[in-house]
View 1 (tube, rainbow, N blue to C red):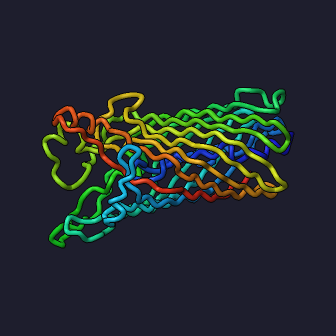
View 2 (cartoon, helix red, strand yellow):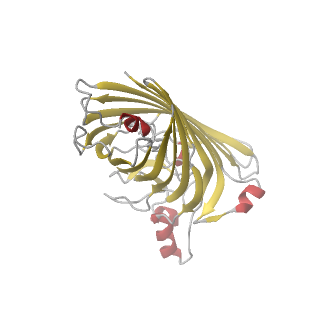
View 3 (cartoon, one colour):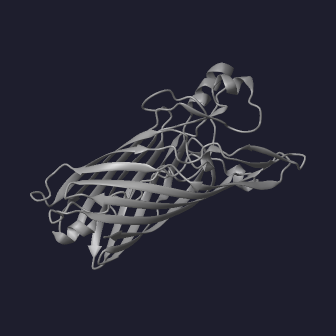
Length: 361
C-alpha cells in the first residue's frame, strides 16, 4: 500500500482558500487565506522522528464575466464596461510532521492584484495592490491509527487566520472630468480582510486498490469580526446604503468542499473531482453587516502531479460550471427599505490555474 500513500499526496490535501482565496474566481473572492497543500503526505507509521514539507504554490485567475444570481450579464462584456480582475497569489507553506498522526502547518501568501474598470467618463483605468496576505497556522491530527488502518483515514484540522494582510489599501481612481482621486481599493483586491478567524478542516481518503482511490476535503473559515471600517468606495454613500450597512466592507466567512478520485500511473498521479467555493450570505458567528459579494462557484477540477523521490510538481485547474452571486444582507435590507428588489452583481473567472512544488525533507 506504499504507492497509495503517495497516490493522494497532493490531491487529498490540496486546499485552495482562495483567499485565498478559498473563494478564488472573481469579485466574490476576498483574497488568499492560505492553506494550499496544507498537508501533503498520508499518515505513515514509519515516521517516528518527524519530517518537514515545503510547498510553493502559484495561482492566477482573470475574472471578467458578471453575474446576478446565476444569470450572466452578457451586456457588460459586449459594452466593454465590465470589471476585470487579474489576481496572482504566491503561497509559501511549511509543514512540520511530528509523527505519524500529528502535524502543524503555516501558510504565508503574497498577492499581486489589479482591477480594471471604466470611469463615469467612459475611460478604462486600473488600480493595484501588492504585498503580504493573511497568514494561517493550522494543527492536524489523523483520527485512525495508520499502523493498523491502511486503506483510508480521516484528518481533522483546527487553525487560526491572522489579519496580517492590509485591508485598507488605497489607490487613485479616474474621475469623469479626467482628474484622479484617492480612494479605498475594491474589496476583491485588498490583501487581507482585517479579521482574525478560526478555520476547521476535515480531509479524508479511501483507496480501492494500490493505484486508485477517492479523496474529500472540507474547509470553513469563521470570521467573527463584523466590518473592518474600510469604506466600500470613495464615493459618498446614500442614506439608504448607509442604513443597509452597505457602505463599509464586511469581514465574511469562507467555505470550500472538494471530492474526487485519483489514479497513479508510474510517476504521475491523475485526479478529477468537483469543488464548491462558497462565500456565505451570513456568517456562522457574529453579525453579517457590511458590503460583501456572497455566492458560490461549482467547478470541475482536473489535476496532475509528477513525483520523483521527495519532490512533487503539480498543476490543478478548477473550471467553473455554475456561478451564482447570491443576494447579500445589504441587498436584502435595501429591498425592504425601498420596496424595490435589489441584487448586486459580481465578476467571475472561467478557470483558475494552480501550479506548485512540494519538497519533503
